[in-house]
Length: 174
Length: 370
Image (tube, rainbow over all chains, first blue to last red; front, side):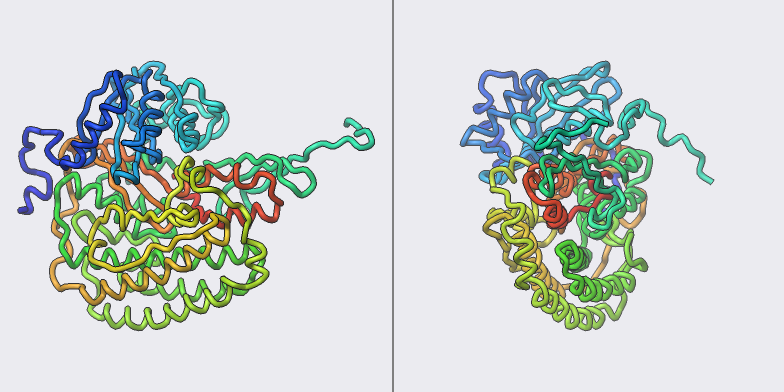
């Protein structure tokens, strides 16, 4: 690869999301689609990792199906990431299966105003703190979470500092 | 003030931290105790929350590396490395062979330094005052080498996107040979001093045990998970960088108690030394950075990379909008997940054991709070 391209200054090529996905990853997507059953699922990729997108209200069912299904066995919840895309908020769940040695991303989009979706704390206890964090920083409401008390912020903090609209970089550099 | 009737009992609420020598940073635990036994515990974190993930959105990619230094400040190289890998993967940039070897050597040295720090402070938690002196001597030797290579004892800002900042000093091999001879002795000495000490074993064996399924449920990774008996290491399962070229074992525990978590880390130090030996042997000459400039603009898209840090599996979810600053950086901090199980672990244990249990998790609050 020449330096120009490596610096990322080359003209962007038309993106084929699935291009970097391995055959193994494609196979997992088929298995996942089957395990999820008749719920609405859209498949894709996060660069080289398989990705599915589901409706927000299905998330708990999808997660528990993927965890318990012996073909998928996504037993570990690695991470829950919230991303503010200004028009909507996206929640990304990263699941890992040591049986298949695959990491799966589940994306779900929430409206910008009053984002809320079902909790998955009853599927993984690891979700507890991640959901509290997303609630702190992005104001995402997780229905059914036992205790959404502030985790990283202090009691009584106003606003959600993770959001793009929260002023953070408005300082002068000297 | 209400008077208690004879025979009536109430639980006592006790505050531990945030400024407490055995919480390893600014961490607070609210303990509900019945005599000396903990009935319930509520961990409070966030005292070190600096909003690193949000700060990263306002910095250029090469500046974000410095923020990663300050997350897990005990294993800086490993943290810089994982972020740079995320950017490189998104850009499709190749890293020169020599830079990969330098990264592996420094990353593994950092693992030993981190585990030595753990060994010393864990000894302190259990009441052994001597090992920390020996462990810090070994760690200080490693820090001195880091200073020779990057110019800083901690907060190196040495791993850059596309490789490393600059080549190692010309006498690197001699420095390493000298260090490794001493370090091997240091590790063995610490191991002999503490591991099978009768008092230490009595304080840590069968304390804070957790079974494998619960550990996985809490998202445990790294030495803590391996102590429960699962042979899982990202370096082995999903080899990144050049880890597929080295021979090393993945130490596994059996009971998932404090002593197992401790001993897995001790064995890991020996394995890291093995990896360093192999890496030094195979280190080629050549360039150390393929990107050259500092300004990088990865294409639009997102990526998730994983790596094995001393504390467990770290993950970086990076979203790029094609500009010179990341759109969103989300870190999966290993100690965050490990710590979330603390409430379960300390329940029904003695207060003195809670200190040992917390120490055995080896948390770094800079990473928990980000």
